[in-house]
Image (cartoon, rainbow, N blue to C red; front, side, top):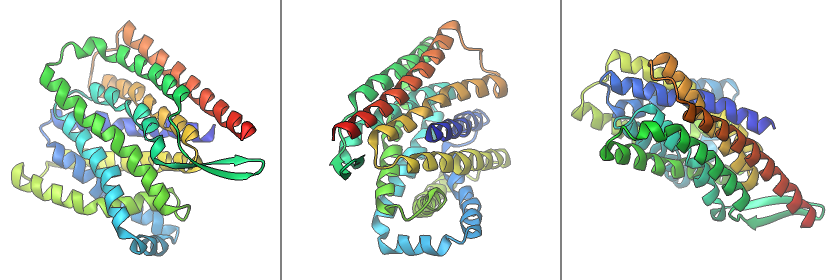
Length: 320
């Protein structure tokens, strides 16, 4: 249960991304700076953490061994994840972004065949290509049903353009984040912990963020002081605290696609935290009774997803 708890804690801090990104857009800030400043600000905090644990030199040595996968999968896991999310926040409210982001629950499950998973058996460790966890996907659909119920009334007030520009980029991000995260776990091969892996991926994705910043400087001008401060808060809460918590949770269950899917399902809690944050901080309308029903279904779906995942793991171990 500890990985699930860490995942929920990560969801709480991740929720600030949707709230603050929307706040930055409403105050006139550009999505380009919302995206790039977060990762630029993450670097010094992560460096202090890793240097304080005397792990920087081993990290740089491992990155130097095979730099190409680091740049590719860090760009996928961070660049193709966060830039589309910030772009979407410029075209739709934070609640629709947070709600649509939960498609990552299914996206992560659909990626299972791309990876080799390990299963502990009485005869030893068995390695096999991951299969689509159909029961887990069914539980994920329950979670999505709850999300749809939460958003359906508000979604009717959006134009088709807002829906497309606010949803399609988020769907892209929903596949990029688990794909980049899982690929980097393969590349690291148990040699790095969550702190080192987050720093390594941030450093490897830095060229993309610097290029995006340069583009923003010439197209929209420098960010305002207000946006800079808000981006700093996002960097600390979502970029450092939430990412490390989530990566620690996934590290604890890596190699097992069923348990990994259960941890990734905890991110559905972001919707609940984002709704609460928007109501309190941005004076958003209080959710309707239908939305509260959706929230209840989300929590039931999470419990069922976790239970089914652990049950299937035990059954496979017994019959292998």
